[in-house]
Length: 284
Image 1 (cartoon, rainbow, N blue to C red):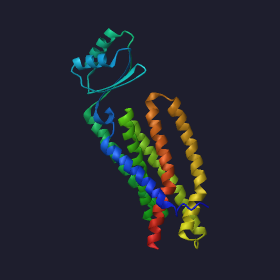
Image 2 (image 1 turned 90 degrees about the vertical axis):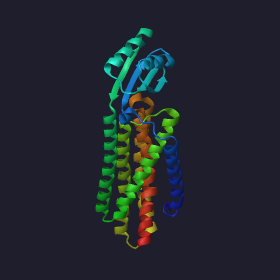
Image 3 (image 1 turned 135 degrees about the horizontal axis):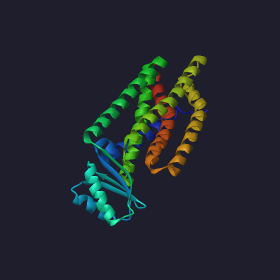
């Protein structure tokens, strides 16, 4: 039987390193936030025009260009909020230089709607975290289980957001409403794995009450590790296939799920369970 609890200090060091790097990326690079939260216009076109030509036409119409991403002749333009009339005028000028220009997507979100979505996102994460903490605490009859589950969830979310801060700075990956969906999904996945370990510990404690606390925890982790790995690896393989072969619109959403599942699988036995052990050991 692997002595996971005895080696917990290495897990703390590793998690601390990941969280430190994530916070560093957030403070230095921040998040590359999409128009879903800031408000503005996202315009996707396919053309043979150069970036400078597109930017010149848009700027001449007194429209501020936030960012232009290009790949294989497909341009993703992030602009300040523009009207349909302004958009049609710019489109006519662009097609005047390239008759084969194709418009793939055009969406505009007002600043007030973007702020409202951001506020609702934060409220949703806070309420779901509180609800999960209360539910887990109630089911296991001790607050420490709920608190440990929430700490593991926060651990996962910080690392995920830090990863996207890094990707946003170096690869232009934006955080949008799909990313919020990924975060909420990961919260659920993380606590699901954690509950499995907690439930196994409760069973071990009931059947073998005279066993030492460390051994009870080790037995609970060892008996659930294979199941957790099999489940996570199978899901990760599916997500990796979608990331490599799927469309551009869901590519980063899938990557967020992939990172979150890897981190969530790690945090359940190596973060939340050792925290419960620390609490119970000091209480005894």
